[in-house]
Length: 636
Image 1 (tube, rainbow, N blue to C red):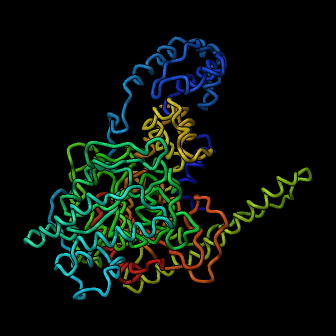
Image 2 (image 1 turned 90 degrees about the vertical axis):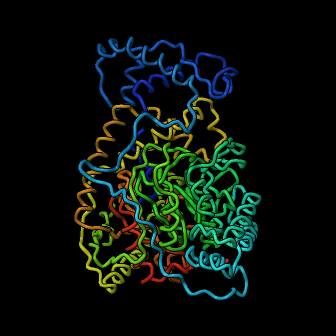
Image 3 (image 1 turned 135 degrees about the vertical axis):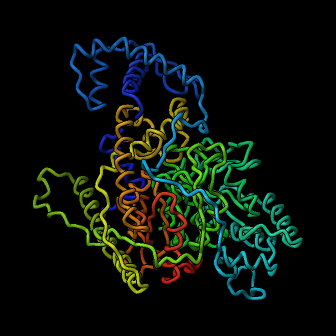
């Protein structure tokens, strides 16, 4: 079955795809041996100063090497184990020297991921943004809240023509944020003082004829992994509630320059996983009994609830896609290396991407036009151009689709074995719960497939000739261990100091355990996975030499594949489930974005070639206009 980000991480953990150095296994084994040899009162993280870690004095033995080899999945003969002792001891002694540097999360590795295949070129010529024709707007809405669900393009016209002031718009969104936060839990911090200062300045400038563009005076929300000077940047995590930085993130600076008004730091699952943060769980405006999914939880929930004009989120492995699917928003996950991440929390240096969450595709393109491009700090950003043309002739584009992804899921052969005679009552209940969950999941997937098929019909009605293409077959799941290894390095101090116990979620598939598990992932396997990633980049480059855009269901293997290759994606709402939709499970585990239920949104995804984001958005916008779902919003 299609898997979301957390389920993939869980799968990786269950498969034993687990961190940075083979000697790391030895270090851990030696640490365990040392801990076992000292009194309980002085053992463990609480006995050391936070962030400090001294190499254990326990001598590495051949037996330890043999155990570590088993963890790493390799075989080493006894005489070879003995020969390795001196070399491994020297390697272990080097750990402390690096750890003594107390590397901050903002320090990137001395390598840069490049999603371009050899021979591919970049168009760096900026041609200027060409937005759509100004929409017809009323002289003044009956109530300012009538604009709450307006698109960026619509709101921009109200502000540009001074029919609505930025101050009035900002006050309205601040009021709605306060009103609905107790229900949806999507705000970490309101930035009211900053917002009102910006809004008054926007009105003054616009009144003086200094109009900066379509974002001028529009209130927005920042996922709380973006640094904003003067306010906490919590990363959604316990233990970081009061963390502050002295400089704004590049994306924040660029939106300031565009005249946008920051009204809130929005929630994210702790350290960018899921929708549970230190203040609770962010909720889905369509069904507040469910979480909003994550990790850009608050950005999607607040946008869907009409509490900001747009928001900025991030994605490493589904964190824009998942909450946009659950909350019915439109998101652009840009090509890797398009938007600088300076001032944003680092989770995976080779996979993190920042992007807009909006109500319409053109909104995403307008925001993207203000935030992309080199900043001189994030070395992964290339000198590529995002030339938005709302009137691009999309009919000249060649459109592909993953035919197999739109077909009914293949049913596995039924298990003819009966429950074992020795099955306990608890085992029976567990088995029946699992069978019920699988059956419910299958029914929901089959129900939602009708919306995917309707999308293909709509494309045919638009005059699109669809070319069937195949998703390149590679072991993408195995490559996701790159993410957890890099994340474990990003938060090495958290693990070594024992402060990981402050994080809200402590289950087997949550970050604290993932970080610990990842310390056993061999450096050699990390490099091998990156070499496999090179093959993936080549395969997807070849695929996009055949077509310009690919249409696909949002869930499934493509989500993992394209996050690894760095290809852009647009995720947009594709209708609402009917009253006949299968009921959602009683408990939202956070593992499946499609649990939905009657009256909740479904999504569709469009994929593009590297740095072909503007072309991708143009086609996605054409579909969105034909489908007409961008104005759907929850009745709060």
